[in-house]
Length: 88
Image 1: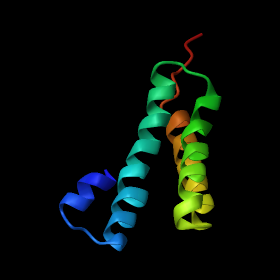
Image 2 (image 1 turned 180 degrees about the horizontal axis):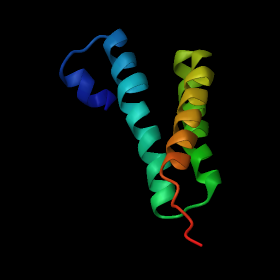
Image 3 (image 1 turned 60 degrees about the vertical axis):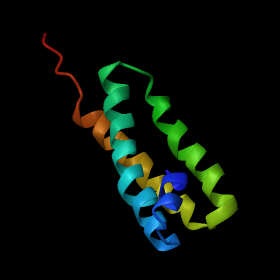
């Protein structure tokens, strides 16, 4: 996505808003839904925020921690939202 944004000459602020808030929030929700649908381990929800913190901390600074927390919470909420009903 950053390469695509360079082609359209979007500024740094637009890149941060689109990548960190819009696209990554949808991706975090998708991870939660995907993990529940295919019955993956609950720990798979942690992979995306950890990779995000590692990749963002070097270039953008400390607020990567806060966004990773938001992504993790959103993934967990979506994970439990799509919980299958147990029929006894």
